[in-house]
Length: 311
Image 1 (cartoon, one colour):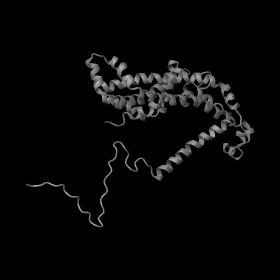
Image 2 (cartoon, rainbow, N blue to C red; image 1 turned 60 degrees about the vertical axis):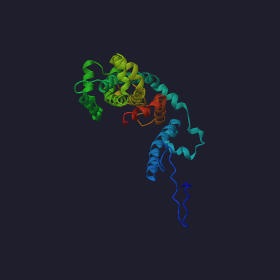
Image 3 (cartoon, rainbow, N blue to C red; image 1 turned 90 degrees about the horizontal axis):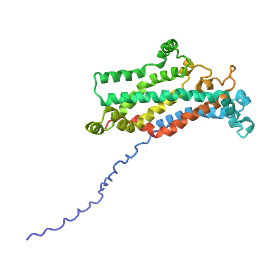
Image 4 (cartoon, rainbow, N blue to C red; image 1 turned 180 degrees about the vertical axis):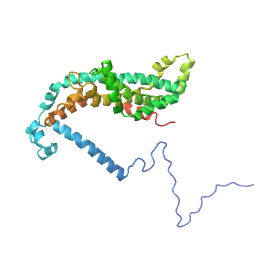
């Protein structure tokens, strides 16, 4: 009769180093050292932040300085006597607003809102067609539209000015927002098409089986699921149009229909005086873009990165 016993543990050898057991890493946890930047990256980030923050700080300080202080000394001299309150004033903001900023705000909205909403609507339809519909030369047309992104906008300004002069659009709000619609359309189609290509195809196939038309599928399914991409392009387009000076100055010019950027540029006198008004006007003009970005920023990164990685 054979007796089966428990195997005794191995006898440790003097001086033998036992190998350590590998501790299993939790799924999703970052590897040791992952996400840590070296000193070169950190130094570059510090330099970039410095170059970005210093001019902004100068604008903010100058906007609160009196006319004499702004004309006779640089903004950095504030730090030599920061408690000298005689060099500060709040009248720059009221004076800049009274120089026509209120009317310019209305004009900027009259240009920016159509230039933002219309390309989103048209580009969303086009992106749906490029993603979920089959028609001849679909990919070729998409490549041509994307290739328009590399064409400088300045190339089209002179031909547009001649066309607008022939049809009587020069000096009208439509002249500005139609130009921005044309310039922003390729980027809108590119962003929305890349995002829609990541949407689950099973949902679209289920809608087809249920008898839904392309129009109903677009409005009931695609548009609600594409809100991040729509919001990300809306931020881009709104900031671009609101902060534009060249196109507004060329097609509208100064006057009753001038936009915010034209009004701010005109706050500096012929003798380069009035920088405190220009900086105050610049801060006032930044209020609307900052509010737009804050309200839509939760969709910004998600909408931009959705089409960049497959899987």
